[in-house]
Amino acid sequence: MQYVKLKDSLKDFTIFSLNDIKKLDKNFHRRRLNEWQNKDYIKKITRGYYIFSDLALDENLLFEIANRIYNPSYISLEMALSYYHLIPESIYGITSVSTRKTYKFKTSIGNFIYRKIKPNLFFGYNLVSYKDKRFKIASVEKAILDYFYLNPHIKTEVDFASLRINKESFLMQAKQRKFYKFVKQFGQKTLIKRIDFFLRFMKNA
Image 1 (tube, rainbow, N blue to C red):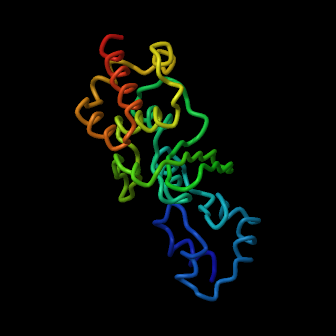
Image 2 (cartoon, rainbow, N blue to C red):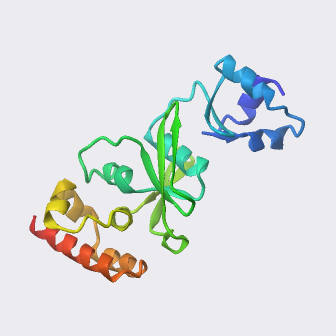
């Protein structure tokens, strides 16, 4: 397969895999991928996944890539809190949760960090659409619950204050009913108490 044909066939793909190419040409040899990388036609993101070198990356595309290279997963934790303008800091990497093992990819386009959660906790995310594409990201409530669940040391007023969550933005976006609906599914009494304490703290902060 010629590169021009590949580019045209996959022009609507943000990221593509060797399997995607073989669906187009079952006799495709992966050495061509090395040739195209050397010519800077494509970039390898992680094993088996590539993007075209002229792809103009933005946050939406990075989130879609994060979803794809480690599936199933959705954007959550610090990255989601930043996306919703709840925390002021820029984030070191694209943080997600997954039912697979905790893992981190260091790539040429950024770091992708995945934290493991139980399969029954893989819920509470939204499908965000953009330019006929979409990515999965935790709701405000689920992003905070995921963060508290994976950081059990966060439990005092001092800890809550250290998160530097914007009160106005939080109260505008977060729904208390959804918090309590979601937190019950975690099945942890201590987490329920911590979230209840946190919500009271945010109201009075």
